Amino acid sequence: MLPDGTYDEMRARFDWRFPQRLNMAAQVCDDWAALEPERVAILDHGRGPVSYGALAQLSRRVQAALEAHGVARGDRVGVLLSQSPLCAAAHIAAWRMGAISVPLFKLFREDALRSRLGDSGAQVVVTDEEGAGMLAPFDLSVITELPAEPSASAIADTGPEDPAIIIYTSGTTGKPKGALHGHRVLMGHLPGVEMSHDRLGQPGDVLWTPADWAWIGGLFDVAMPALALGVPVVAARMAKFDVTECANICAEHAVRNVFFPPTALRMLKAVDVRIPGLRSVASGGEPLGAEMLAWGREAFGLTINEFYGQTECNMVASSAGTLFAPRPGCIGKPVPGHEIAVINFEGKPVTGEGDVAIRRGSGSMLLEYWKNPQATADKFRGEWLLTGDRGIWEGDYLRFLGREDDVISSAGYRIGPAEIEDCLITHPAVLTVGVVGKPDPLRTEIVKAYVVLKPGTEASAEDLKAWVKERLATYSCPREISFLEDLPMTVTGKVIRKELKARASAEAKAEHAKVQEDT
View (cartoon, rainbow, N blue to C red):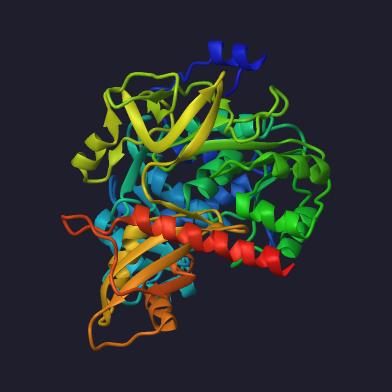
């Protein structure tokens, strides 16, 4: 989608030009299957290549199963699968029908699944045997086996604004909200994906990420853009990031383009793993810093391109080493097609520090929060979508200064403290709790919980960790729990997380100083 030319020329000449009729199933599968059915779509690690023709057949078998369960246009379809051809096929099948897919993470536990399934109203979930066991407590239809005969139904007549997918946020200020996106969301991602991978789609390109396809980063920063551009995408299931396995995957599939979350890069740097043959490395979620960028140039022989976005409006800023030099601490420049501003409380652009905002009209911007008009209204200030981040311009580079909210950035995951607090407070021994991010040199932050127990009760840190792990996701489980007599509270009874975060930061500094002293 990016026009040729310099960065400034691309911005000046770019135009979204969404077609009147648009369906992502055609973009990522059906069009390619008709033109080049034998072209490789997915490199299924440990199993072999999958062509666009085979992917189309698989997705139509999923579609036949969905039709047999009565799924119709506008219905929500859960997809509880790890990186795999079936995961891609399930989304494609739902989109082809005009249904709305709902990606679900395999590390979710019962409460996390219940929240998302209940809010979305999904009554059918496509999954595997492991997922079926996870869904046993729920009253819904579970599809684990597919009919032999594919559906012959015509593709739904959809446009760019018709709903296609609900992706849940991290729940930074309460329960996770469902960001409803239309069929234009894929086109909205393509300029940023192409830019962050130095014009992805060159001969020989093969794309992979260790990020799960249940999140917008795995699904729309990697899997679907690759399929749309005709670039083979690697599907490799990693229960936990492992540097040796990562290197083996890249070598086996001749990966040339990779999206590494910052934590993955730090783990690779810690053991100085070199991955030869890469043409582009992209990373997003937090600024990498000068040291990491320097290591990337030495280890990969290229510039790591940082990008910026969020579930509600993704891939809106990026670095691009072949277009302009990176600036450490900055997250790049606006991607063509996206207008970013740093604004004040009145919604007016400012030259100093302010709220990072994105003007309405960005192709990757959500339609609305699912069944939550108040949250949708609160997300905007006039014509600007509020990211919740603070930033400042350095020329035409955007410097990220931090979050307005209390989101925890840990090992590549964005974790909302409210959901963890809501879980812990249900433990019989817990009176009140505050959850914050504690600085960590490897994971950026770890989840730290401060807990006040009810008088006369007992509970260990391990008891409470197990409580969360059984109900939410493994990555949501606090790595540290401290027990206090009371928590800092506002006059209205709200925990003052800012004070807890300052306490956690002081703890981290003291621990770091002790390590330095001991060495």
